[in-house]
Length: 440
Ligand SMILES: Cc1cc2nc3c(=O)[nH]c(=O)nc-3n(C[C@H](O)[C@H](O)[C@H](O)COP(=O)(O)OP(=O)(O)OC[C@H]3O[C@@H](n4cnc5c(N)ncnc54)[C@H](O)[C@@H]3O)c2cc1C
Image 1 (tube, rainbow, N blue to C red):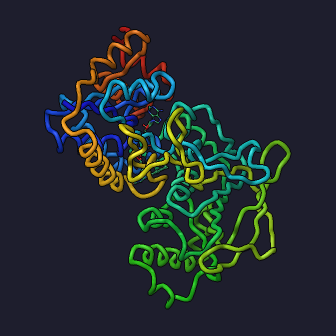
Image 2 (image 1 turned 135 degrees about the vertical axis):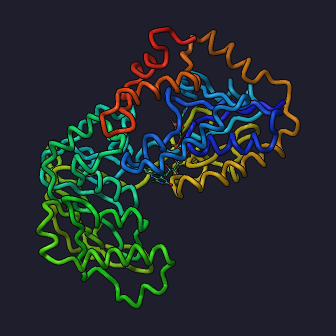
Image 3 (image 1 turned 45 degrees about the horizontal axis):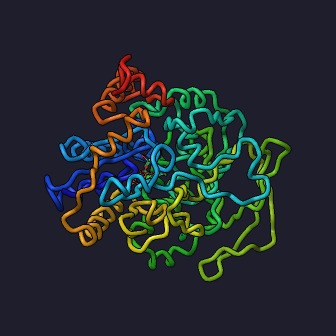
């Protein structure tokens, strides 16, 4: 028997479990740990609440979770409730699938001012992540600046722009919907250091900005390269750039009908966040491209801003005793191997890049490495050993059947037009999981 502990129940964790099942069938036991009492990582707390079809991938993970040789061990933070060394003594392989849950620091003067948020926090807030439920971003001002030119920046801009009715069918949490209902934002500026050819925005997400009820996208035609230059782009990127061209061609009449503008400000590098204790403006330097890199031109201007959301990337949290590659914000690893018996996968291995599906080959590849390293497994105690440790330590472990009770309770308390109303508080989750009974 092989005993595997996977730390993190996001896509990378579940694809690893699926790969291990495929590799060893009933000859493996897998425990999937998560610090939250609820599974699925960024599928629940990152993917936009108005993109329910993407969140549907969790049904595939549920099939893995419900098999006999896989257990969900929620509400256990590895590195705090239990150490890596303890898990290594119990399991043949420990796989870190902990994602990259922290914002990369903005590193600008004024970044600490009130109402400057990173996207991990801001997205976590509207998606009901317990760590960010109290963020309370102030949406009462007129202008929001979104820093970054990737899909997360588009998610944030779109969520800020949507009407109440446009959230029908989404699982945006009630507290965020209430705040957005009262929002005063009329101008959303999306800042990119480079130009339209360098965006990391996919056509689906970009196209949605052209379909919003009360917001229209604005692109300065002068920022667009010569149309002939698009020939060098790969087809997806060409589609995205075509959408930017269509936004640039929108007429004043079409724009006037919509009170919110989502303005793409290309060749614009933020240099400072300005304010007393609260953000008032963003100071920007115009850039030009030099061999694909943005270099400052020395010309600066100021955008008045009441809210700033920095969507500039994520980093993994270090865990005591695990080698960490500070510059890349991920665990130091050689194709998933960290130390003997210790592996990483997904965003914890690669850093924050790729789609949900990119994590699948990652999971399968790390299981191949584990197979090379552990052979037929060992006599380590595996899950029985962990259960003893959890008992001794009084850990309130949330199992998959407990999550199913949380899931049911969230669905029952949903608004009329929503699939669920998430609990944003760990105690409320545990209460729903135990339905008044203490968890075993
Ligand atoms: C805002 C946003 C929107 C996105 N939208 C899309 C999209 O629309 N389509 C798409 O294809 N991709 C999207 N992605 C990318 C996708 O979410 C990632 O590729 C994927 O979630 C990475 O999977 P992961 O398993 O490595 O990490 P995660 O999904 O982050 O999972 C990590 C898990 O580890 C747990 N954990 C962390 N530390 C510990 C610890 N110490 N102990 C126990 N558990 C721990 C966390 O609670 C979490 O459940 C989006 C990403 C973001 C940030």
